[in-house]
Length: 328
Image (cartoon, rainbow, N blue to C red; front, side, top):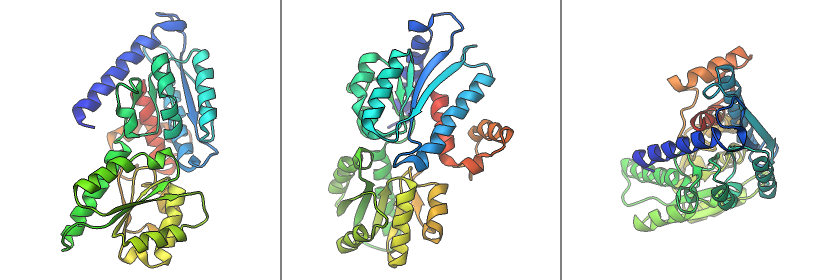
């Protein structure tokens, strides 16, 4: 998404939030709390990254309320763990809208895409941790807003880097690239756009799903048979770490470059993968705590005041914090 489009989307979102929060069923002009709904994956298959993300959203609300709220009005966050279950997400969304929420923080791609029609009909500004390019369609998803680079764009950026790296090392032509992806709508989201980019640029490209498993030896065997020079991992931290460790144990990392997109390019992956994380490249739409920037300061101070730190909580806490900050 271009910077101009992104800024326009943010402006539309903020304008919609102001209109909604100050009107509707919460008493325009009153000091009644502004109700915001949220669902988190705290116990499901993406809870490794979902837990710190959810903590970041909740912490930002606490910080904002302690600092006067929104024009003197407090945020009332109504949330639940939906364990990455689409039907549970749909039930909670309907329940929270009936309870009067005027905006919503979602999580996964499957549930966010499933809710698009309801969100548009209800005119509920909706942000989530899904950066599916399908949510950029303003006709199909006029009330869905992305604060991060889409999975499609991340994947294409990774492919562009792979080609540049391949040629910088003295190789001719283009490398073979494999996408190892989470076996869900989240994982499948960038495939059409990445395939189109590969076709347009003469890149041999394969995709392989990463089902829930204790190892990925079989998947790596297929990747080796294909002859991949680069493997892009589009999944969350825990399975990506397992794949990286399996690849290292098989000697693949000596000749194959592994790349993580944003949901596995983090401290969790580094901790779990150990030595196998060495040399893995990441696509990061958000700045990690290891590279301090001014946007980290309020979150870090809040955490230190509560016995923790941003370096302890990590990148996805920051991601949740700032997603909620943009919404409010």
